Length: 174
Length: 174
Image (tube, rainbow over all chains, first blue to last red):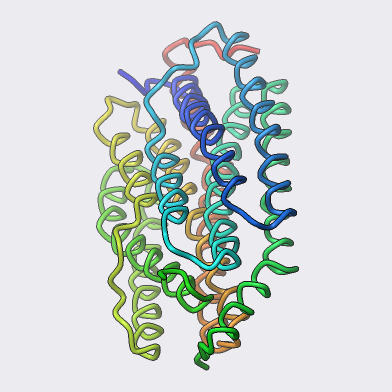
């Protein structure tokens, strides 16, 4: 029986996140390279460093549990990254691309928020309070990254992308 | 040029959500059928009805914009659903499966929270305030569904799944 108990589910979920983070480490540099917005580039680069530290945190959990971090490839993160990468090959106004990259990155952050929320709660239920605290730390970082992306979108990126519309005479509909 | 302005991005994002919701409508009945927890089954069934109404809301937006809702298949939702469906074919304790289904469903809700957050903000930026209000309504529903799933997990499902561990003598590690 594969999911015979809550421990098995906890491991299944941890391995899914491990695969997701590993995929993200490969995608973030491409997203950072694609943006022309300095603040957004910095946000992607900062989150890459953070993601590398989060993988180390997961490595430590796996080590203490005495199990391998290897599991099936996270199909959802593969889809999220596929969508983000498709944007890079589209012929786009660079300001609109920045707004699009934020939309893609916020989907990624929300995936991780849901995932870490689950493993944190499972760790608590299993009485693994130290792990729960560590996973909560990562969860807080993902939430802060999402918040930062939100601020960038609402503060400048979406407005600059809207300027692209005005220049080409595209009229927003009511 | 594909993403030449913010309107183009708005449409791209709306079509992604449309594809995501259509896929979810096919997946939710399978998730409802798979659970043995009556409250969770009801939550999935209620969210199916809600999702159908959300698709109608999107249909109306596309109709008012005078464009087709058809776009590429949302790869991220395809991945999310693939992960959820894999759970159904695993040999699992039914109580652990319920906890796993909530983890999968919360990932789906978070995808939609990120997506509707983006299109709501883009609609605001484009001065489409009626659309922004409608998309905010869906966003609020997705957040409430996620909250409901959270309450189910923390209120009963995770605890019952932990009972499965105790019965088989599996010892949670510190």
